[in-house]
Amino acid sequence: MKNKIKLLWSPWRMEYVKRKKENGCVFCKRIEQNDDKKNLILIRSKHSFVIMNAYPYNNGHLMVVPNRHISDYGSLKEIEKNEIAELTDLSIKVMKNVLNPQGFNIGMNIGKIGGAGIVDHLHQHIVPRWEGDTNFMPIIGHTKVIVDSLNGTYNDLKIGFSELS
Image (cartoon, rainbow, N blue to C red; front, side, top):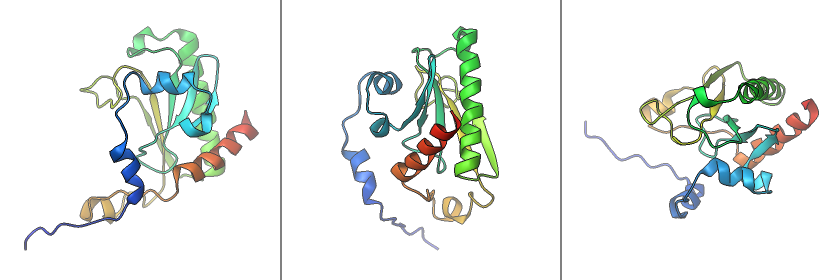
């Protein structure tokens, strides 16, 4: 049987395809701006912030990012490590209340070889998981399905962060 090309209609991806590649650090640019909704920033703290992944592995995929531009975990100050842990804990509580996941993947990809897509600015991923979120689509269709829009999820999570923080 010959491999046939499979098409998935996703016109919203055209914005990503046509966009100009950003110069500089994506996270530093986002934290310097004041449009949290546009930048998908859910909460800011003194040393770090929580931002939605614009190209998520799963619906509600968040990242906790130190404000300081740093790539080496060992160079984080104790106060930054503590705040990242606190924001991770808060993010899990919010997602449990808002998205009702059955589990989580939490971790950092450090360095290019470690799988970091953004190598120069450390960040921790928090990916909510549900039974069945890995199904036939990625395996057979080579397609990952995200069930809600970024803006819809942002609005729901933003309310959740406001209620718990």
